Length: 83
Image 1 (cartoon, one colour):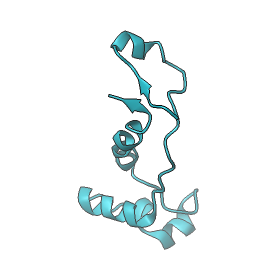
Image 2: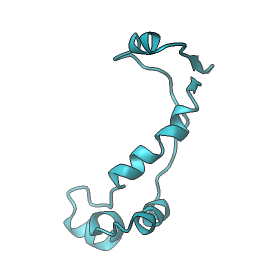
Image 3: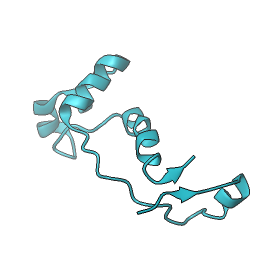
């Protein structure tokens, strides 16, 4: 798929609510979550304690930090948009 080229804010605004493209799949595994927890000092059990999450989390698994999810956006963005 060819990258989308957007030349102005007004043009970008015209894409509101539309799909801009599709990036490659990026797996967020437990190792990445643990490294992010170390980097941010956020070791809340829902992110890093696999066994407790299996028992107590409604998802029955750990979950990625919200900021980890946001931090990979530039990587995914560059796959679909030409700057």
